[in-house]
Each structure stands twice: as C-alpha cells, then as structure tokens.
Length: 595
Image 1 (spheres, one colour):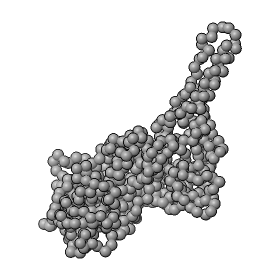
Image 2: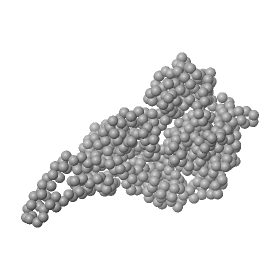
Image 3: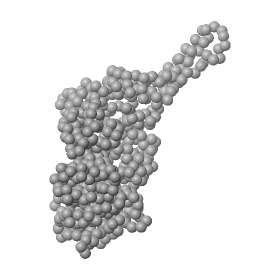
C-alpha cells in the first residue's frame, strides 16, 4: 500500500487535462508505439469530435522513483459543468488531485467548483500551470491567482506543457512525494466502492471499484451491500489501456470485477462490494446522490421500438450514472420515457449516444426543470412535466428551483453579462475583482432561465472569455403559469411549458410564429394558439392551400361559381374536423432555438 498513489486530474474545460494525461502515460511507458495517439483516454468518438472529456477514465501506471517502483492510479475527469457528477465519483476514489490551470486563461469557474469538491474530500492538491509553451502565457499573473485561491507558496506550483512535455517528470515526482498513500487494512473485512461500470455484450457488466479495506481474490463469493445480491468474482484485475487480470487485489487498489451480471439494474454506482462469508458492517459513505437538473421526454419515432429504447437506456445508465428515467406516455407522441439530465449538453450527448451506440431514432420534448406545487389544502407535489400540473383553480402557489451562479470574466464584459442575467430574472449577489482585470460575479437566478440558451448567449457576449458554474440553492415561490400550444383547438402536450407570467406573452408569440413556419400547409386553415388556461394570448394561422374549383366555369351566371365555392367550403370544414396535423420533429427542436 505504501507504493500506491490514487489521484485524479481536475480542471476547467479545455485547459489541457487529456493532453497532459497523454504525456504522463507516455513518460511512464504505459502506452507506447501504435497505441499512442492524441487524447488516449478519450476513447469515445463523440469526445474526440467535440474535443471534450465526457466520461471519467481510470488507468494504472508504473513509475520508478529513487529505485522504488510505484503504482499510480489516474482517474481522468471531465471539465464541463454538466459532467460534475463524474468528477465527484473520481474524487471519492482518490487521495490527491492535480489542479490544472491554463497559463493563458487563468482560473475559471469550473476550476473553483471542482477544487472545492476536492478540498471537501480532504484531497492533497498539486497545482500545475499548463500550456507554458504558448506565446500568450501569463505565468506570474496566473500564479498570483492560484496563490490567492489555494494559499500555497508559489514555488509549489509546477510549470508544465502537455504539448512539449515540459514539467511532466516534476509532476510524477510530486505525485509520489506529496500525495499520501491510501489508508486501509488489507487484512480487514472487504469494502470496495463501485465508482463506474460498463456494459460488454460478451462478458456482461464490468464494475470498476476502489478497495478501502480487505482483499479480494479471483473466485471469491462477493455481495453487493445495498442490493444484497451475491456473485462469483470470475475475473478481477487492474485497468491498463486494456483489462489486465490479477489473482488478488487488496486495500488501496483500483480495479475491475467481471461476475457475469447481465441485468443492468443490479449494479448501482456508489454501492459497496463485500464478501459473503465475512461481510462488512456498513457501506462506504460520502458518495453523493445524483440530482438531475433538466427533464425532457424521450420517445421512439416508431412505437414498436419502445422496448428497445428501454434496454438502450438501461445500458447507457450503467456507463452514465447521472442519467435517470421513468416511463411516461403522451397523447401526441405515445409511450416513452421522462429522463433527467444534469444540463443541456448532457441531454445532447445522451441523444447522440443513443443514436450512435444503440441505433435509436428518438424525439425529445422541450426540456424543463422540476417544480413544487402547493394546492389549496396545503399539500405539496413535485412536478417534472407541465402536463402533470393540476387545474389552476386547485393551485395555491408554485415554487421553482434557484441556483447560485458564479461567472468569471474580464472587466470589459461585465456590463453585458449583468444585463443578460437581470433579463433572466437574476439578482446580483456580489461582485469581486480578482487579480488583473478579471471579475468574479455571483448571481442568484431561476434554473429554468439557464436551461435554454443562457450558456450560448454568455459565450457570445463575452467573446468566449466568461466561464460559468452553478449549484442549486433551493426552491423559491414564483408567479408561474402553464403555457399550452393548441393546433385547431387541440392541445399538444409535448409543447407545453411552465413559464413566468411576465415572459408568457412574448414566448407564446414567438412560439406561434415559429410553428407557423414549420407546420406544413393543409387543404384547410390551421390555427396555432398559445393559451394560459382558457385565455388565448397569441395566435398565428397557417393559410390553407387554395384549389381553384371555379376554373372549369367559363362565363355563365355568377351563381354557378358561388355554388361550387360553397360546396368546397363545406368540404374544407368537414376535412378540418377529421384532419390530423403532423407536428414535425423540427418543431420540438425549434423551441430550444427561440431567440
């Protein structure tokens, strides 16, 4: 155990974590030759295309220092705010963390958020200044920021470059010297924390774990503490670039277990593995529950694909524990699932993965957040979907979730950002000038307001120089109303939204105008209306296609033409009563893009 070091890499998105991880793997000769490529640990096509880390990846390296060989277990983490749950799981499995800061950009909001998470878990922090080879690097300014935040001596900050390999050896030495060895009793009762799992179509479910106490051997009978299910440890081993089987693993080790589990629901991330004969007294604590922020309905395009979609979501949940889902049905879209996501990027990634990995074509409804509704009797109900909302006459008031948002930007963009946040019903809590011309802004604002396009607008106002991070701060009473979209008097439940009364008219007007462009013209007039309860607040009309029925009347009395037009009018009226209007998938997506 003295020779083991478990550490993770934490940083803001695009600060060079994956590139630096590549250099660590190269210098310790964990990955050589053909296997060496850019972003080795980002093994998903999506991660390479978007240039971001989506999953946390574990890998073991061997490093010789002063004649002794050390085992370094690296758990690489994502940097985007939507994947902070992956970061929390990695941090729960480590004793130390490399804090990577981009020398050209300085400390960003997500860096601070992940740093606080690591400090809460009492991790040893090693600050690293990355991208030192860049001509725009500002080492002295950024060092001052790190000193201000961490309270460390500036000599402890390692200057490095993931591209050129500068400072990589110093980082490896610091990991061995500064990060403590894991604590635990190899001879005690087995306690191992499951921090991730993947589905393999040949071998079933493979669970990744970190052993806190005890020893596990191949062939042992093990039990998952929370589910109480028992399995044989058919294969255990450590995570190199591939799976490397071992006969036994003990306290401090990070590894995997294959035990022929076929049902996805049996493996819960955060569960504890123990022995059947001598089980541990309690599960490992300190693992946070996932709290979805954004909810949306996901429906198969073909109704018969419903069961396939269920099994795809099950397998995807194994690999992404922050995804939650429950079955639901919609009058417009049939049977599907109500899914909970950590943010809009997370939702986009899940849809993309369903398409690529499971070949599932799905329709998603307008994303929304969860609300708490209090009725006249004082009872409260949590509502994830506007269609679940009770009749307005039974509602006393509605509470919506609020967040504490932290934005770090350059001083020249402060005015535009404050205006944007105030437009989104935000309240400026404090404004703090950091070193240089950087400002830290704290806002309290409703989560519903940042769900749509807030992040994109923030980036365009600040020319990409603002970083954003948030955490929930509880529920507050708000003046909200359910806005329904009606086509020819029929409500389309998939387009219903809960919205603040002050914004309802503008939103309804934009929705009806957008749908007017997207809904194909029919032989009859289609009325698109936005309504709050029985009150219509906005309307657009898709004009009917005109068929000239009077073309065959050459001359003659006007009554002949009138008779034909009256006949056509009756036919159109009858058609309108029985006609069904297809709402194209583009219409559901267009709601997200309303400016």
